[in-house]
Image (cartoon, rainbow over the protein chains, first blue to last red):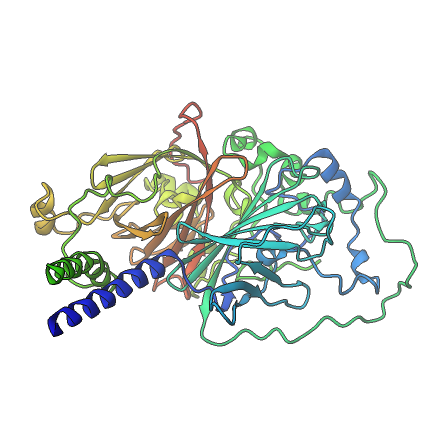
Length: 299
Length: 256
């Protein structure tokens, strides 16, 4: 009898070990502070009219060329922030936490805290459906997640019309984002696939690396509006068609082909290199701001 | 009878739980009997094309001499960067310096991934016509085991020596590759160096595309005690292609 009891308890203990091992290998805890690695560049050097690495439709390109970054000086737009995609486009890290059902102890959601000009994100893990397409659209959108093959897979809808680049490349409110969070050791790689039926000719795919930080990231600086020489009610700064004064600036600065800077689809594939091999002229040697991660050229 | 059943349950569960626990702890568990090819949790084989949406200016064209933005180089690297001479590299037969493992996955082009044998994954690149061999831990009793144990490290090469293992997860997993014994090379075409002491760690992950396609993401970490003051991490990605009809091998170039 005693031997039987011991054997049963041993069986139960081993069952728990087996289940625990399976759970641990199926997912990871994304909670904590993740510092940005900033070794990959999608904003290039923050110069206007830089659409490198994008596949834009004609509508998307036209709308982007109308963008004047002075829009962000309008007092009602200063703290508007950027859309969900800015998580991997911006310079900041991630501070993530989980929320637990008080009864079942299951994970209800993961939260990524906002930073100065990004609105944060809640990823619902409890199996809830996305709301009606007529439901409220926000900068952060509505995100649901699930575990797939060891990665956290997230789908985001219901975003306000916004941007996918700070250079004014637009997204409509019909855009959707699909994310994968991969963790390998202390490195978290976040993969973004952005689709927009109006402004993107092909999905925009971005990945950004983060490293687990022992020190918690501090995002306590909220956006505070300040007076700029624009009054509420003034017209929104923009450029009429064919009047963008910066259309050639980035292209000339680096000697880049126009179609690449303008976000033509074929420029994203290796065979495009053959078409520019004989015409591309390497710019003169770099003399200013040539190095260091995150060291942007300022106009 | 009941005792016998319980004992049998214990033994079955022991078989399930203990090997994975030992592996997780890096213990001395024997290598799995199945070949790496037969136990692959994900299928990486096929043709893949670079989709260059990041670092476009550093990958699709040769950036200006002297620019190393976003690479955490040491002071020792700066004179080398500023002295980059592609013509001298070509004369010395070093036109493949930017096609080594430290950079090859970021060079725009196509990959052809196949199994060379049951425990060796092979990656051919059409850009620079390079070949990488990713060798999984040899199984007990497999043909190459004895010779591998006896073999000394070979001469340094652009692609070095790569060991691979599967990192498994429910419903999938990842390929982990570590490479060393490299020839000194470039992290970018314009001469940002890594030394022969560099090591490269990579994870190969798959993700579905919303249109039904498949994406290969390679998170790459280059560590170099000579020319990098911090790990250099990039994650180039590739779209799967249906066949090799666009495969176009080209030789290494020191300028383009």
